[in-house]
Image (tube, rainbow, N blue to C red; front, side, top):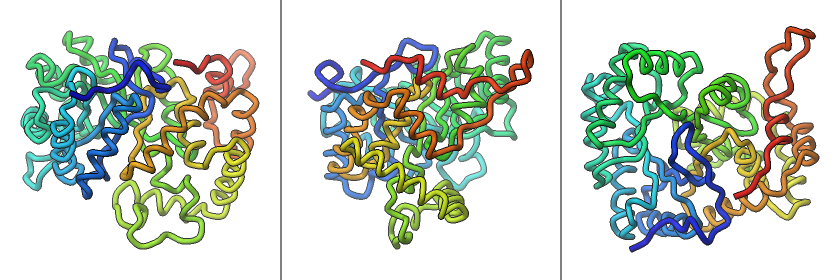
Length: 358
């Protein structure tokens, strides 16, 4: 039987929000890992051996194919269930009018179908993959609470909800004595910073809300491989939705971003690392990031990504300032109304005050 190696490893572990569950700061996402089954199993096995214990998927990834693939891989490796944290997300998995969004019907039926595909009795965390403006928030909170009480999930969370929407869920759960969400799965990388460094600040400070961030490489753009052109068949060329939006944003800012990526790549090279490793290390250096989800499709790629842990430990205040000078895109903070001056930049304050260790 195989299990996540959480003792003899360099991996960093953090609590997932205001809960007692501990998760690896680098997580394993499988939405692009379903085409080559053999490679899929090998990457999962390497992740386990390297101390990764957080495995994320969703019903919409391949319309169930990703969950099925993850379930088969876990079964083939005979992974001890208690040693890992498995999460899935509910929002859409079918063409019927009730196969989408966050009605009580779809949350319950969707999660049950996810468990069948995963071949699991429960997931550790079930996410509301997006906010549903059509369904009453009370219905969503009650359905999530019901799933937890039934033992189909241990916790529930949000994904790309606004701070106001999360606070609305908190208020409903408090009023009705329901279990509150513990984390949000939001985008965070060197180019997308507002939610983690600005909008969620009060959620972190007052409620210890967690984050399982996605797209740390901004659909691969932060690797620098698209500076010449977007090759056919690459992720940025093939995938729609977020990747398509990333492509447009990148092309609209290409000259400026290419300059920044080149300069950051030189910083990484001077330290003996690569640009992707620096981008990942920069993300996990922020203590408000509970988990940074890696979307790796090859063993070699995963091996390289895992080295970001080493690099993260080297980022001190001086190196952080050097990186920030290149980026120059930290979100504006609230004013300190006593002096009419902006409060300290969130990330700068955290990095200077936090000891980064296991």
